[in-house]
Length: 221
Image (cartoon, rainbow, N blue to C red; front, side, top):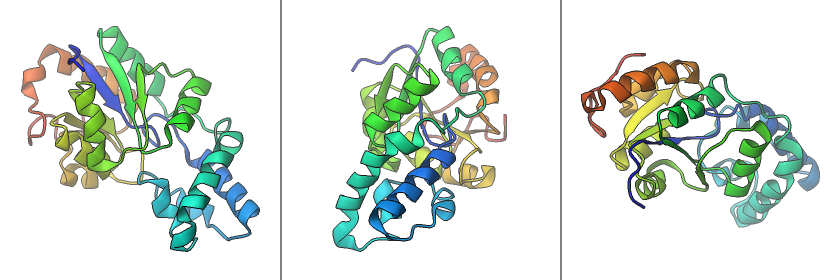
């Protein structure tokens, strides 16, 4: 796909949406259905990696595919309605559009469920790509010509850098600001409420930032 003048990628869980309440409810439904204990409170502290990594903590290896499929089947009824947008999420997407750009969501979440969240919350992404984690996110970021990728996890930082996109991190998920910087995030924001002002600065002088490199707003901006 040809690069758009401005394409910004966004992670979903704990970047655009606070998925902890919904995911907790989905794990509780899974435990009730299977009769297997799942510590849902602990699970929601580890959001970011693919579902299968969490399922392996509670189920034998030979059941991981089956139970993961069941979780994804239960998810819409238990997780979507109770999941709010993160502060500044809608405004961040709107800022990209106001700048004449495209906003692409690239997430490890099962794509149909990711789309349900965005539709429910009225977050108007231009494209959604699911089931990609960490470095694998670079595939979609390159395909859509993303110059910037915004996420909350060190895996998101690795995905951005693999794609030679600018890594903009928000300290709203399981990784704190120091971890995100140590992983190579070039811009670290407290949350998405700071993103529109940062995007304005970026639009004035994008050459200030070297995608995949060490410079940029390395401190909180």
